[in-house]
Length: 533
Image (tube, rainbow, N blue to C red; front, side):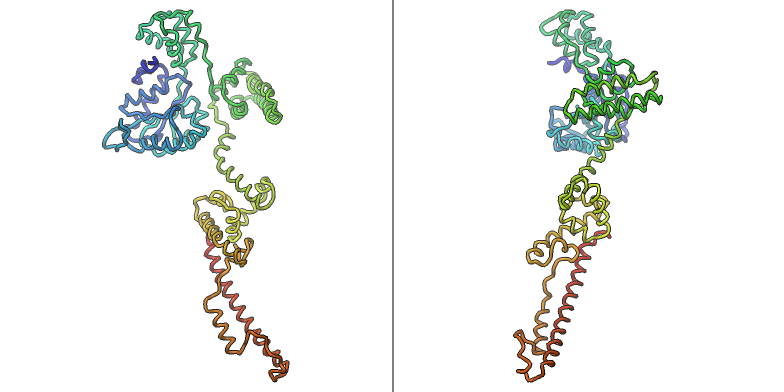
């Protein structure tokens, strides 16, 4: 059995280090005694091995809450989270056998989502949205555990307002050493003092790794000396974006600033955005600010050239400008403690992602229909379509059918909400028009370009043809050609006048019929196009 599991703290009082974070976590848990608080979830954020997961489980033990946990080894797509976490959050108890029961039969549950900042990829599709939905609806306490708050909030910015954030720090080496000493005594292992110190320092604040290292060197031994510890190398330390920005802006040491890029697992473009957002908050002197922004501008040029030419050796120049260049751009130290912000550009792009996707799909459809580029469609034709949709209902119905608009695209052209009545009525009218198009085109009674305005062709009114035949019988009109005027025994002019009268009567009947068709078509069109104008 691993020593980390065997010697895991069972209560919050036994958790080593981060006393302020532990107190904040316990205060949040106590707030549930008065019912669900305003923020029903908490984010425990900090580097690996600082006690976040241990503290969450110890909290459940202290409060008497049963724990439901989803970690990186579980399926964490939308369906899995809804089945386990959401169901548990909306019910009051989760029995050992897996059944959900109501509040009258038990206490609260603690829902723990470990490594929440690593929910991405095809296998976790929809997982982050399901987590946000769970937090909004939950009647149970929820704990999210993450190493990188920036990465987690980039996946879902709503978590910043829905959750309380509690930050854990790396554990100090002397605290790590005392824990290792206690575990050694419990395992009846004799360890030299200097050996314990080396293990604690090489762990770089990661208590879990320090315990694993001690167990590794103690395998098959009852005594561990300094020489035995020599085989344990120093761990590869990763830093977060907040720490990287703070290091670059606070130091004036080129090596310390450059080291950030090796410890930061992010692309240089993201670091550039973070620095561009936060340099004005740190450098208050105009000359210092100008020099720092000049370095960032030159770094941006190198990054753009590297992307365009595929010559990624240029990243080295950009990295030096972003780190050492910005760090040494200041003439004095700024004793400020600004709150570093998430890049506004990234936040804006995240909020408008759905809107930009709708604009892209709509522009592609219009460009295909109008035989032009998507750029021209986006810049010129979409505004024109929006204006025409507001003026001409028939045009709106016709184009909604031709372009096969969905709810979001129709809402963009109507400049309304997707769930609004106008949008729904437009799509219903377009669907009705699409249903009638087959008959119209099959019988040659209309065309796609005129269908929206004139309405579908109507079948002849019943009885109308029979009445016409009766009129012809009364006047003696025949389908066969009339006999010559001489054979009828009357002057030619009289016959001509008679024909003219008959033609005029028949023409009048046709005009009356056409007028009736037009009135009925207009009435049908008004009922079809009434979606809010």
